[in-house]
Image 1 (cartoon, helix red, strand yellow):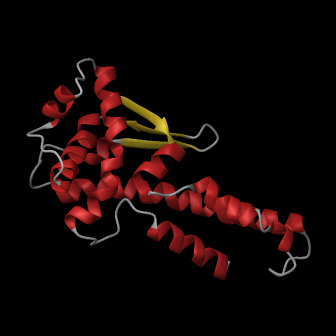
Image 2 (tube, one colour):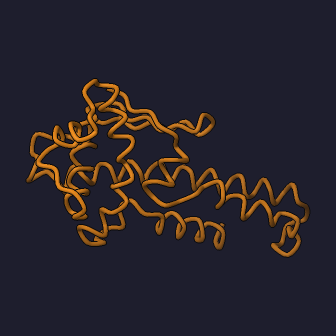
Length: 181
């Protein structure tokens, strides 16, 4: 089953990261190109475009890595889950992220985050679906999409052992690129 949602929305909801705002902050300063050591504004804008391509590639790697980390994290509790079967694709021009595979994998992680956060408790994914109520496959998919934001609390709930589902490493990587590239 395929879950397709807005990439910008996903980044904001799950990573608390606004890529457009982040990029605009740098593009808005393009008129200061001489202060940054560039001969003209066009060269500086090209430089920014290359940096942002690298940042977007890093974001893709981070999302895939974070989702696959869930497999390691939950493997003892849910041995039947294999996250490698969940294919994630990005379309930056259409602003979409697509999860192709068993959406129950994401639903399980969401339920575990909700339960760990403590506001609600669900015995299983089906109880989450019935609370909406989500009966059809489309409604269940929408339920998963609507609850993806719970993944942002993963570090808070389970300890910040590797900086999952937050923008700290994205911003750090971008800062590194701007300093050394």
